[in-house]
Length: 290
Image 1 (cartoon, rainbow, N blue to C red):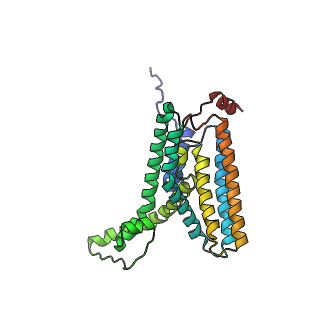
Image 2: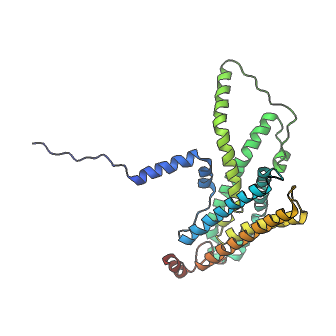
Image 3: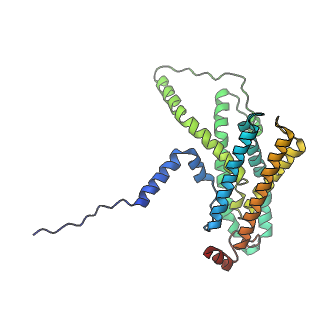
């Protein structure tokens, strides 16, 4: 008499397949990798996700408008990357000020709660700086022009050609390295640009220390950059009326979005003196239930 043996094979669930696909996409697609490493966490409420999508599409639409409107007058991509790098650099230089201000403003019993956010900010900042300077260091080292001055100023110039001599077994590894470079270089450059985007958009991840710093810090840095450009009248060949319109519209939309983000965070209980966690849990629960 034979008994039917139960099947112990685990059935593959759709969630497992989706998770596998997301992991593969995160590794293969550079913008997904940058998003995984550098995008700040989004709150659990529906309004958090809506504001995050609005911020993303504001950046994309603004980028498209700038490309279409100014491509006749200038090389758009170098100027966009330069402005993003200036934004990230200024946010990095000013970073100690909001952190110190938060430790001073926060009540003594809540200051220890700021430390995990500070560590997360420092981790992302170090990782972003490492990825940002990696290609510059490799190129300058290969050209024999590597120095602290070139890294600090961001000025890259070559006074000598890079020569490569290979023979025998070394030629095989040279060809393998070239083939690998053909595959990895486009991926890395896209990832490099995405890293600059996240550093500029988040104000060097100030919101990790306290959620209220996200709209205030990033918008403050943007206002400093825009004010500096308006004072210097740095149009880069773009007509004055068009350049001023684009700057003012970009500033206005950023301010409106920052006000909505700030008001939303306040409505769910975030306060500067109460630390990085909501203090009014009843308000947060009512908002979550809407």
